[in-house]
Amino acid sequence: MSKSNKDENVNKENKKSYNEKKDDEPKVKISLEEKLKVSEEKLLRALADSENQRRRFEKEIKDAFEFGGFNFAKEMLTLIDNLHRAKKSIQEDESLKKSSEFEKFLKNFEIIEKDLISTFEKNKITKIVCLNKKFDPNFHQAMLEIEDDEVEPGTIIQEVQSGFMFGERLLRPSFVGISKKKSEKNEENK
Image 1 (cartoon, helix red, strand yellow):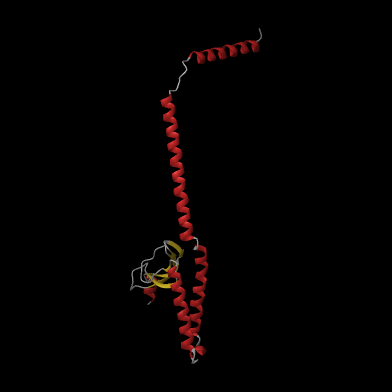
Image 2 (cartoon, helix red, strand yellow):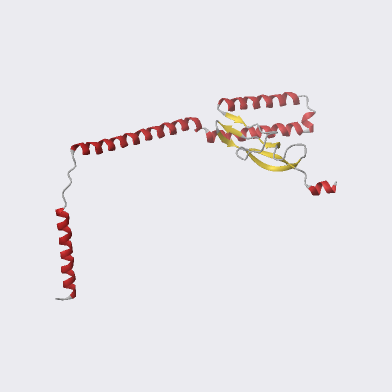
């Protein structure tokens, strides 16, 4: 017999002995109670999964109602920013200050600004109050540091651009100037 034939015979015998052992093992019969228990567990898991999915969908619907206008609200901030810039520009224009209608014109700007802010507040868009508060990177973005020994370092002493919240979410951080201690070189130069 050749070597390959011997290998084949050995493989056949191994397979036979494996199959015989398999057949010799007692077949385990699952009782009806055990099948019922397994089915019950599967049913409970399926019910739990469907309940979890229902809760997720409810949360997504709630979030869609609460924060669906988030992008629109963010775009509306440019309107109030432009209104502030226009008001500041008018207040600084010397030729307009001399006009007899200047005060009426400025008052109209203030009315529009109050109406816009009122509309924002009705829709859960609120301005972040930050002056004289401690810098918080979650709500503020530092644009500059101002040397000032009268206040504690890290205190907001200037608001460059207002920040806003949309409900509990940050719509835009406040762009601020924060205080820092005067450096030793500046003190030596004085």
